[in-house]
Image 1 (cartoon, rainbow, N blue to C red):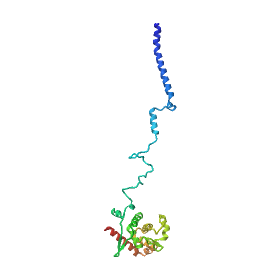
Image 2: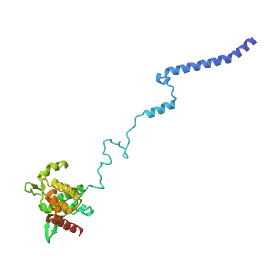
Image 3: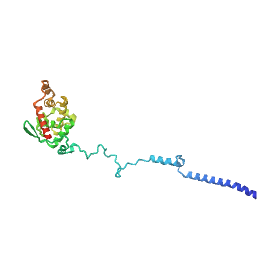
Image 4: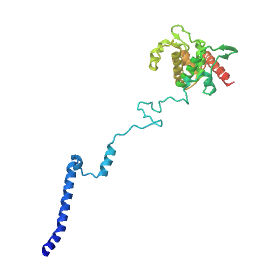
Length: 253
């Protein structure tokens, strides 16, 4: 009896250990079988799975300061209208004059002791200023050409061959269509044509204003006949320059 008890005491710890091992194996088996297949078979550590899910999450749209999402169709910064620097065409002639832009609204000029009234509208004088800037010619020079050619009469129809404020030769319309001019009876288009040709004539003679005006008035071939004789000024060029200088003097007062 005593020996039997001793044997039992020696076997008991082993049985307890075996029982615990069996219970643990059973628990692991049940837990594994209860998991979804993808999770049970995954060998990724839990932290790695979380990080991967965060990386794969779709990006949320950025929020503006006011809490609204940024609209991808909004105007880019460079095309958004600026309230601080309005374009010249948005400013009145009085504002442009006060800003020292070079613009001046003329109502008259003097030449050879005579006062010449300038009836050209504010709108067309502003347009002349913009076109002069566009083609790199002097605003007052363009104004003076209009004064000599048509007396600043925006309704001047010409004689059918030379028309509009600048007496543009109608045969030149084919060439002028390349810069978007289609109607020489339109005062604004006629003004652009004046600026275009003045720029061309100035470049042709190397910047000499009198010679450029002679080319404008008589064409390059006609003016060249005078140049060949050593004549580089004309009655026409002197009158235009006189009008121009008078306007500049008025602006500088």
